[in-house]
Image (tube, rainbow, N blue to C red; front, side, top):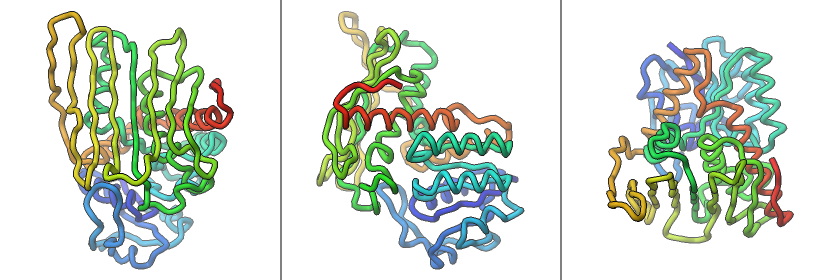
Amino acid sequence: MIHVGIAGMGFMGWVHWLSYQRLRGVCVSAVCDRKPRRLTGDWRDVGGNFGPPGRKVDLAGAATYRQFDDLVRDPNLDVIDMTLPTALHAEAAIKALAAGKHVICEKPMALSRDDCRRMIRAAKRAGRMLLVAHVLPFFPEYAWAHRAVRSGKYGKVRHAWFKREISEPTWMDNYWSADAVGGPMFDLHVHDAHFVRLLFGKPTSVRAKGRCRNGLPEFWAWNFRFPDGEPAVHGHSGVVGPSDITFNHGFQISFEEHTLKFDFAVIDSQGRYFVEPVILGERGRTRRTRRPKLRGGDPLDAFTAELRAAMRSIRAGRPCEILSAELARDAIKICQAETASLVRGKSVRL
């Protein structure tokens, strides 16, 4: 049995708690939050932009802590799952690792590459695992794309385009603070930066053009350059202002002979496809439009798969590629370079 302590019982803590209930051989043995009400199991004040609303739960048998330091000193815990505000990730992870715990850190890993380096060094010193919970590759559409690229079944990727947009994030405090959340670059676009890095490796340079708010990228077009110019990868990300479309993401990935495409949005709190996942044939040949059979549509399924992969990694003693801290660190490097490119008005090398 792997015993987990969750630090931070906000929206993501709630999603992780629900996901752990679906896993065998795992027990949430402690929770930590500064709000006394949440330590009684009353999570009715918790909510976000997807998933079930918070409710009352039975915490019988689980230890409860108001202070993070007390949580990491609990001798019964094997893993600390950190769903804390991003600005707290680095120091909290380093403390937990030094206390001999494995760490699952919700994305983004941190707000700077220096903090990422410190976290990785702490994991190596402690001989413990640091896993960064980037959930996007576990969503069915992105898992489908990942399999297609890695298998080579459609040939080489020639071109890829991604988008990720939200309306004004009124559900989150300090969103436009560089020191707390980091705006849409680190909270939103980091998903695609991580996914592109996973699929194609590290770009040699990035270029971003768009607008800023409070000194942070607000909405921008981006382009990643790779060796020899292939694949051509670009997209756009950011906050689009007040809108009935609270969330919109999608991609188009063109191989030598086929193209994968999908476009999904949340409109008036209801999720729907603009373009259902589809495989398009090459122009000039007999077109065969096919719809892949994808499992799962509930976002909680993706988080469950993510945490199942984390538990397998801990049992095996080696991280799966998707959750590796090095991959998450590179995503932060990319985001920092994009911010610099937007501000300076020129390409930035990595």
